[in-house]
Every structure is written in C-alpha cells, then in structure tokens.
Length: 253
Ligand code: ARG
Image 1 (cartoon, rainbow, N blue to C red):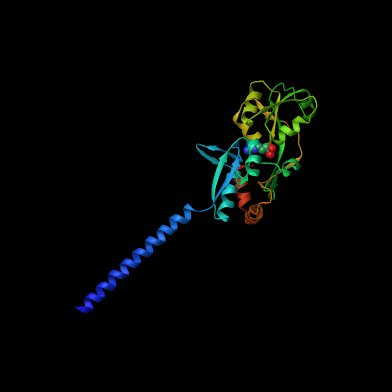
Image 2: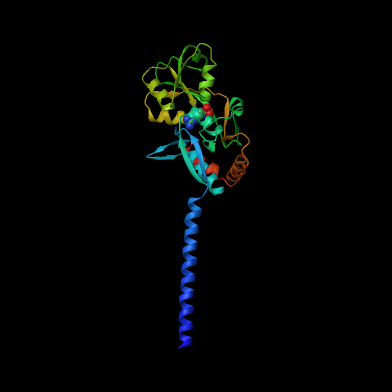
C-alpha cells in the first residue's frame, strides 16, 4: 500500500512538474515574442515599387528588404508612413529607428543622418505628355512648370534650374495627376516610380534623357550602432542573392 501511494505521489509530482515546465515554457515564449525589439522604419509609402499600399499593407522592395534585415536582427519591423520630407527629422530625433524610402544618399542629408551602404541605384527621369510636349529634353525644363515631390532629389535638381517654375507636391502621384491635367509641363521623379506612373496613367511618357546615377541607402540617427548591424545584414543579403531576388520580383525587365 505504501508503495502504491509512493508511486501515485511520484506520478502526480511528475505530472505537476511537467505541467509547470510546459506552462513556464509557453509563457516564456509568448513573452519573448512580445518583448522582441521593435524597429520602426520611417517611410513614405506612395513610391511604387519601393513602398506602396496593397490594401492596408505596405509592400515593395524596401518593405521586403527591411523585413529581411529585421529577421536577421531578430527584431519586429514596424513601418511608419509619413511625408517624405519628415523622414530625416523622424530619424535624427529618434522617433524612428531608421528611414528607408528609396532615399538617395546626398551630402546635404549626410549632415543630418548617417547612411548605410547602398542597396540599389536609381536615376531621375522626366515624365511629359505623350503628345505636343513643351518639354522635349532636359534643357527645356528651364522654361517649364515642373512638378516634383517635395524634398526629394527631383525637387533639389529642378530647384537649381534657372527659369524653371517648381511645383511641389506632397506625393509623386499628385505631381503626375497635375501633369495629366495639363497643370504642369513635366514631372521629375525617380525612374522606377516613373515607370509605375506611366503604366497607371494614359497619355504620358518618359523622356530618354539620362540623369546622374543615385545611390539608395537606409538612413539612421548619427552615431547609431544599428548602422553597422544593418550593414552586416545587408552584406549577407547581397551575398546570398536575397536583395537581387527582391528587386527582381518587383522590377521585371
Ligand atoms: N530618391 C529620391 C530622394 O531621395 C526620392 C525618394 C522618394 N521616396 C518616397 N518614398 N516617396 O529624394
């Protein structure tokens, strides 16, 4: 009888400790996913194919590369959509951990933020009406009304052209809308979003006028150690072909 009680006791004890162990394990698991570091990415999600809405979700090349980086850093990616010209301030003030928005590395921006290594390149292009365009080449911008997205390299570029009248819009799509309505003569914007706009709107085309190559990179608060970690992740993602795969998925040639 004593033996039976002892055995029963042992069984109960074993069961309880197993229960305690599993419930411990479980609560630990939920906790660790809850306490996973969040990394906030500041972007402007109206820039297909780099970042844009598919329903309520922000997708695109930058969104996917950012997710791959966060997976490597074991962090949870949170995307904060904002005006393009708020991104640098969000990052330098620490409101966001990094900025990724098809953002070109420029000396001016480097005064305010650090940039990672570049993950892809782009160039500015000129979009004009398909028929009877007043703007036939880059020089013609000097006598034209030109739409740009506020605070972008297109804005900086056109603002430097003497004689051009710059119309600044908060979204590239609004600049393109103004073009299709004849309110501006041309739009200067990055090549891939330009292709997407031309596909979505009738009666506009891209001029065959090459501009300087630009490097896209991720910006971070100055002196942040996250920059090195992201560079390491980027290097791995470049070397194993992930970046190319993501770019090719969105930019079919
Ligand atoms: N590459 C240009 C720049 O850095 C335009 C970027 C606009 N990006 C965006 N997500 N709206 O100024």
